[in-house]
Amino acid sequence: MTQNIYDNPRFYEGYSRLNRSVQGLDGAPEWPAIRALLPLVADKKVLDLGCGYGWFSRWAAEQGAASVLGLDVSTKMLAHAEASTQDSRIRYTLADLETLTVATASVDLAYSSLAFHYIKDLQSLLSAVHAALVPGGHLVFSIEHPIYMAPRQPGFIEDDQGRKSWPLDSYQHEGPRVTHWLSDGVVKQHRTLGTLLNMLIGTGFTVDHVNEWGPSDEDLKALPTLADERERPMMLIVAASR
Amino acid sequence: MTQNIYDNPRFYEGYSRLNRSVQGLDGAPEWPAIRALLPLVADKKVLDLGCGYGWFSRWAAEQGAASVLGLDVSTKMLAHAEASTQDSRIRYTLADLETLTVATASVDLAYSSLAFHYIKDLQSLLSAVHAALVPGGHLVFSIEHPIYMAPRQPGFIEDDQGRKSWPLDSYQHEGPRVTHWLSDGVVKQHRTLGTLLNMLIGTGFTVDHVNEWGPSDEDLKALPTLADERERPMMLIVAASR
Image (cartoon, rainbow over all chains, first blue to last red; front, top):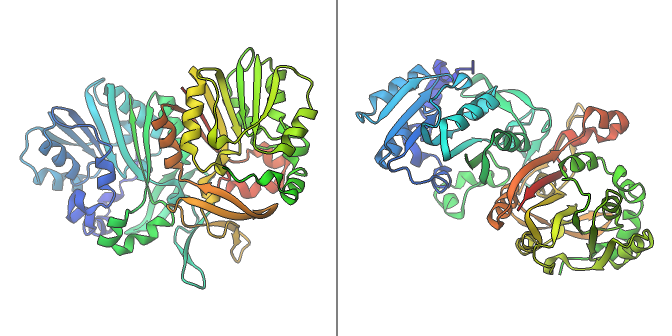
């Protein structure tokens, strides 16, 4: 099964302090770009893959979703999510996305935020999501960008004039990457962008939009520390449909 | 119009000595990957955008293409291409791809090798190609990878242990890049991979395959100097259809 780093106390403690954990969707700078790719959610059946604290699940319910199923591998995060809602249309369930089973053609929108890069057997997950979607249904997800994941030393380097660059290497070497983010030994799965897109296409999805997220001028005004994010993309947002 | 660097004597001299110029398609390590994405060419009408010496045009004719139109902005290269064939199915024409005009629904396969990164108004070119294709027609092209084009200093750096990395920066800053390859002042147009794919999708193409080309184990056995190409992709190959 997928590494459940979110139930690691040190990781959980760090994660719980991130802007996106405290403020929810509005604390994630990429949220407006994701939201722009979402179909209308009203009266739709929504699947939230790696729902975490449930911010998106609750947002979807507020938008009038008919039902929302939030799945996560972390009991800690699900407990927090369940304590945050009274909405009977939302159901949170403990699940390993590596072995997802959802009823065929039961979902209008499958959503996932920054979870797919933890998945070893992404092909099985995408096949399960494809089967779960109704014809014409949508998959919108964010994932760590392969450029961000690939390097042996994933950190900016500075030249004499203080200009930053991202030392990319190992791009074609797909497989696990062990990093130290919030806690030691976080395992992510590097795949090239081509591999990811071809996996979607091969599964039967149509690729509708690819956003290698970077901050807008407005984003930079609000949060100048995002400037580095223009040097190399950290996140990838993909919209696809069945 | 697009910079016609190929008629620059120094550039042309250097270009004419490259493996891909001397040996043709088999001198380009990415050719097997491109070939794998091509539809059957027999009896098809083929458009070769930026045909250069005409290697692909001649290959398509050998495969039984009904007709091949090779377009290029370089009179020198077209003269060479014309001198290399007697095949009446092949026609070479001087053309600026920035202002392409081809009859509507007259082409089954549009092909381009490493030309699109010189095009400023790629949207107009893609719209013209889309209109030129028959419904179900194919566009297969290679282009310099955005990772390769983006940096201010596009060259590998080495660490203490001789391991190479590619100093990526400026990825989100789209626009011209002036490099010194074969001659000074070669102007290329950097766009993110997302921008390129979304432009295709917005034009009406379906994205069928995305190959961020890297050498196979066999490639490395034949040409060990290609090893660096595993650290970061230099080329992107895209198959799309109308």
